[in-house]
Image (tube, rainbow, N blue to C red; front, side, top):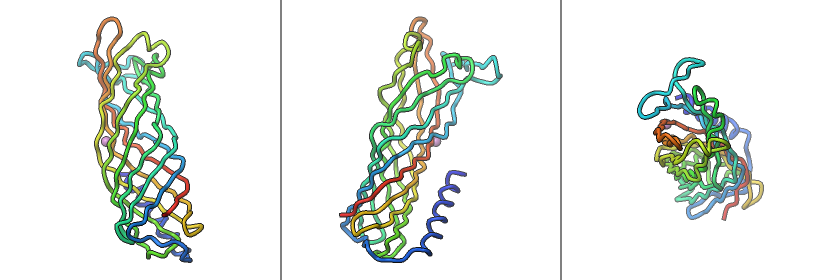
Length: 234
Ligand code: NI
């Protein structure tokens, strides 16, 4: 829930900024395309299930509790394209160069440290609402839609390459919400900042290389995705 509150906070800040805005250099109208490009960061808010080995929880002898995993953040080139249905409604597709994340174990397999690297692509389709008048230079927006995330190039790191094999992460399909704004610098060019909250849940499975033990862990990644860059309207 706090994710939605963060987004509401951003939306409120954007609304407050509207008051300071004047000018009419950019018109958002039906049929317009808005291309946005910038640095996109996927920052997972990891909620790891317990690592299971052949169905049994892998305990964490050192700290107590169970063995879990963590996933770091990554920044790539983000690209998005909005098609305006009219002056207030648009449809946006978010794309990016593949994100690469490192999975770390915590607990009894913590000695393995950085377990594996995995890449993913998180295409996200949202319906967007632009509340401002068509000719406002400042165009905040909110959106909601769906995300599909596919994982690939799952590779164990270092000595774990020899210890384990067959790492796979299930694809994820979930909701996405977003808030952002464009600010026009010229008739076609402007600056953009946007944030998404995306529900990405997956199940990771892998095997021990020699004794065949099957490992499994459910992981909620549920990242915030930030993008800051430029927009071009045509
Ligand atoms: Ni989730």
